[in-house]
Amino acid sequence: MIELRNGASTLRLLPELGAAVASWTRDGIDILHPVSDPKLAAQHEVPVGAYPLLPFSNRIGHGRFEFGGEHYQLAENFGGEPHTIHGNGWMREWTIAEQREGLATLTLDHVGPAQQWPFHYAAAITYAIEDHRLLVAMRYRNTDARAQPVGLGFHPFFPRDADVELGFSAAGVWKAGADALPETLLAVEGDWRFDPIRPVADADLDNCFTGWGHEAELRWPSRGHGLRIAGSQPFGHLVVFTPPGRGYLAVEPASNMTDAINRMQIPDNGLVVLEPGGTLEASVTLELLSL
Image 1 (cartoon, rainbow, N blue to C red):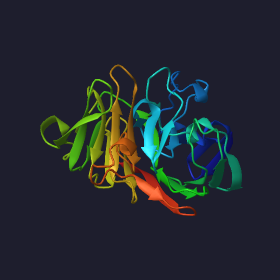
Image 2 (image 1 turned 135 degrees about the vertical axis):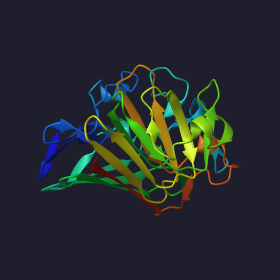
Image 3 (image 1 turned 90 degrees about the vertical axis):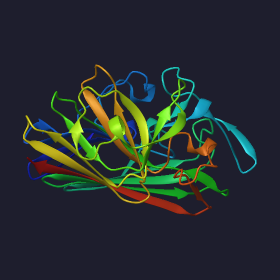
Image 4 (image 1 turned 90 degrees about the horizontal axis):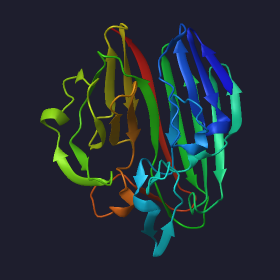
């Protein structure tokens, strides 16, 4: 674990555990909500507050896909669920490439095993902590001799107080089928609408929103603060996860929709095809707000 400080904020990182954020506290108060998920076996039940998603966000159905005329089968990595989830960056040990006051850059070179991801890549993530803000910059480079399909995402967990509120704009939302894969694209209206901001403590969501407006806001009125989540291009999707009976929720900027690699016919599915040597970059800012 490494620790970064700036002003009243302290950020703890776990290079050895998928470049995850262990915690972000300000004046000793948790901003993120560290979660231990036994289904994510590679995290060894260590609580984490956030982690990067690469080379794809969310699920690939049954771990199977076809690309470039080849068929691929990925290994299961999520507690016996039939789908492969969140890529493999979270499963690996990263290297500390740079560390100085308030900033650290971690890197990962993937050349196998192919069951995790069949293409070679080099990834970097930079965390920069300020007194009231966390900046996260991700960079992915195709180091293979072949083109490859790529998506990026960032998965933070937040406290789920009884008065927590969430707001953002989006164009559509994918309703999932019984297999947890996208089934129907719906208009964002009624219970799917989060503009204006509204309570979500009792919500039951595990959905990918399309046409995200690149900003979301969380509010905790009883705590007297909120948080703005801003994502750069190519983060055009937002996954909202509010599992029933849990003390946390997740609001995840992502470039690709769930199972995008098997839904190439869908316009704006967010998947990027990187040629050899090509790069994909994205950033997320989490900024504390006073209420």
